Image 1 (tube, rainbow over the protein chains, first blue to last red):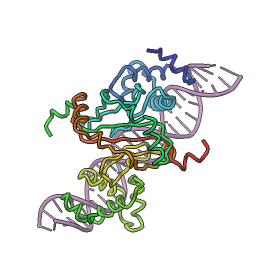
Image 2: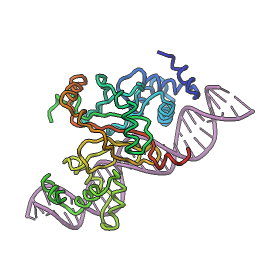
Image 3: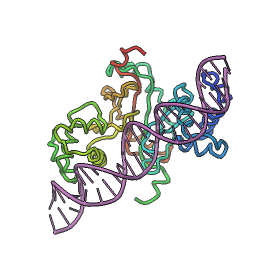
Image 4: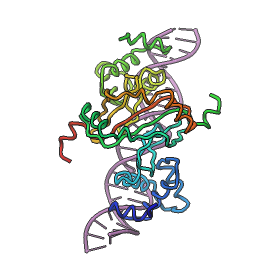
Length: 144
Length: 144
DNA sequence: ATTTCTGCAAATGCTTTGCATTGCA
DNA sequence: TGCAATGCAAAGCATTTGCAGAAAT
């Protein structure tokens, strides 16, 4: 795994402690946190860090392509440091987001398919998201 | 096409002019409007209708399965009266949402695939959404 | 030295809520 | 009649913005 500092530098954005910290949090977790979760996680270590900075930081990291933004149900946008396209499952009860690893999205990026959809819709496409909705194992146990 | 009044009645929800009007708007358009757009569309005909009612109505229609809710980019949730699963394309510049018709999502609902993903994730799945992101034809022409 | 980022607080925008009134069944 | 839906205004969150001071290149 490449050093975080290097990765930011390669993207030609200024390397600040806040940016390294936010990116580090996202690389260490599989929980697809939203901005508030990232903020809470960083608070003990960076008491001065502002929520607005977390918002700005995930925006920058997303725009340079170091992380991806997930638009699943409620609770705000979620962030994922794994940028290789993969499907996500969302729990409609507790809001948990998990990766689906056993399904490749390569076929959705396949040259011919994207081209076909571009022709049909006239859109110039750049990315794809596949979301599955349901109930997570923990919420399934609980009645109702 | 079935009469709107009948469809609401079959879902055992109270039939009101507001609900029929909102559902009618969604059946007549392919623009995947958000709540504000539906509200603006109805204002001339139903000047007394409240924005809150539109919010409550799309929520009810979605819950009984007459419409589906789309969680694409900015500008609020979008609504679609076509409930058969199909992919959507979202324009990252102007926010337009369009249907993709040339790609079937049946394979994503295939018994074996859903089962496989349920086994891997432990989630009990109920629905799927496939979103493509890019730029629409109109926005592609404009520079930058 | 410049440019960009951060932190704060205020502002914005979408959505929900509480409640009195109205309307469907 | 009784329960549910509507309309209005206020409240609630998530997110954005403007700007002065701080930090990175």
